[in-house]
Amino acid sequence: MMKNISEIKTFGELKKAGYEYISVKEELRRNLLQKMMKKETVFEGIHGYEYSVIPELERAILSKHNINLLGLRGQAKTRLARQMITLLDEYVPVVEGSEINDDPFKPISRYAQNLLEEKGEDTPISWLQRDMRFSEKLATPDVTVADLIGDVDPIKAANLKLSYADDRVIHFGMIPRANRCIFVINELPDLQARIQVALFNILQEGDVQIRGFALRLPLDIQFVFTANPEDYTNRGSIVTPLKDRIGSQILTHYPETLEIARAITAQETAAAAKEKENVYVPDLAKDILEQISFEARKSEFIDAKSGVSARLSITAFQNLLSTAERRGLLNGNIETSVRVSDFLGVIPAITGKVELVYEGEQEGANEVAKQLVADAIKTEFLNYFPKVEKLQKEGDLDPYQEVVNWFFEQSSFELLDTLDDTEYQLQLDRIEPLDELIHKYAQDIPEDDIPFFKEFILWALVEMKKLSKYSLSDGLRFKDVYGGYISGL
Image (cartoon, rainbow, N blue to C red; front, side, top):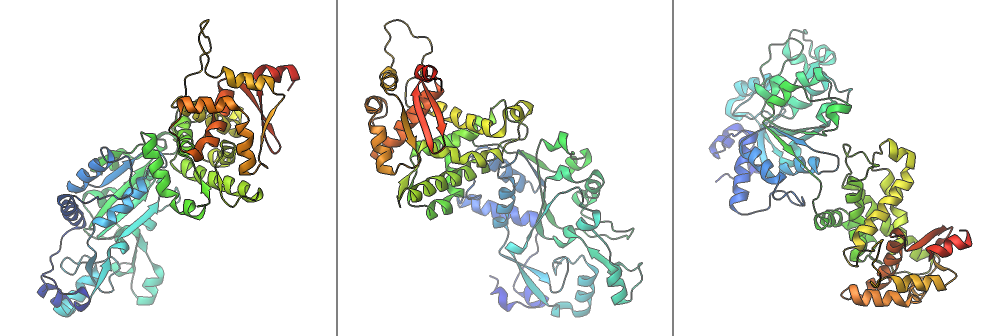
């Protein structure tokens, strides 16, 4: 049993304590095996990957592979890479003062080798905590070999009075400094091809080449790359020899069910929801919000290759809460509930998260976003209520006819943003056929959700061409379809 690491300050003490060197990949493998044997969750807070991505990632770690996570935006690629930190030992020893985290048992830098030769077992060591063993670089076209690998430092040469032929004038780049760490390069295809070529030897032989120095540094690094398939065609590509040197390529994906999507959004918006505890959000509202992303991913107006990030749902939910909170405060309601009309407030969160194709640009980002909201409402409507048939047989009963008749007999019906919660509910209660519909088809919903459901039915009937809806400066007006034609609206 090793004694407290704070008491171990020299190489000799480390040897007496029984410490044994293992590579970072072996370290990850060993700790993963321990967690799996204890049935512990390895990747916390990652939803929807339990039977797809996570098993593949665990297999890659067990195989001690360098890894490429390939997937569209907002698929938790970087989060997965960062969570690999939990598989590292809490502390590892390094030669004190080493730039590249030299292990005292396997020193690779000239500094560490000279120090160990000079001081032997009295060589001072320090301890590197696991959170300090993660390096990350976003690949951009301006990244240079010097940034990643290193270069000759003329200032160091002048200060130490060394010639450029001395390898001590080298300033190490990010990769050598990440020795014995996890090193992540995000958006790998954005690296210029010549920079990718510089990674060949590091991945295969573990050595580096800097300005012609015959420098052999067997680096100990777990590489994780992330890439977007779109990058292969639009901006760059991963050069074939580099792909060949990456052990495992793992495909990520978007949530496959509404329940998984809701779990992700709830996790990522927990802080916002806590701040806005005075805003009640019906379950149906949460489903509609997630359905917007599902509709976007199959929309003909949105570029499917670019993807629709999970961040769309997260920011849209934050906007939904804020829209309801603001309206409630303006109307004098300290506590309020989300309304369907509040979904108009999520449009700015949608427009910035989707890439439109040519047809979408012609429609306009705002119109596309509104259509996504409408499509989500239409989809969710069918989970509760019967489908609206365009052509009905004679004698068939139309479950929505009573609602349509009610509007035909009224001059207009308005839901204004200025209505406080009590007035809003009283206004919806005027439409008595809505109570019958809810009682027949959605009788198990909570009492607090009934006003939301009533407005939801009106929006859905508009999309099903049973009613018409018009935007006012301070709210919405609903009418029957033919009444709108007659009045010229």
